[in-house]
Amino acid sequence: MDWKVYDAEGRERARTVYAEDAAALVSLLGEGATIRVGGNAQALWTEGEERQPAGESYDHVRDVVHARRNARGRRPIGTGKARWGDEVVEVDLIERPARGNLVVRPRSGRDWGTMLSVPPEDFEAAATEEVVAGVVDTRDGVGVALVGPRARRGS
Image 1 (cartoon, rainbow, N blue to C red):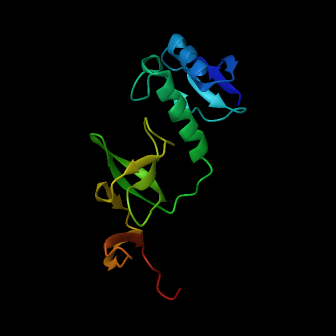
Image 2: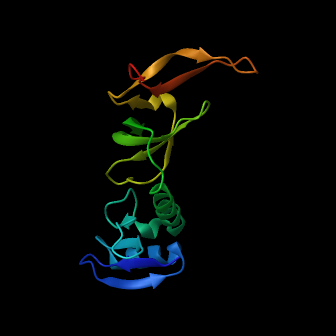
């Protein structure tokens, strides 16, 4: 993988094999420096716009840029809002397992493109979706409430 590091003016400053090395470089270049993959790609990390600076944890930067790169190809199955920390963010719903947390991807802001795992109670579906009232019977006797897309009439 070729990680590209750009300064705040958009000039390519380095290419690295490891995301952690790219993190070290953006921490040195400072606010506005970015990490990208591929030519003219959208920034996967922008120093000064993230939850923490790159210099605080290169491993964190690695995890974030890998997650954002991997999230690009996954199509959302819905949209809504999710509580993430102290914020409520607009998200794309990526995965809705029968049990456990939902997988969402913020649509903008500091965590855009990062796959987040949120409890179902922290997700509010957009107007195009609704909570399906009902319980699914499972072999172990546990009932699970489902959130699903609104069915269209005539389809």
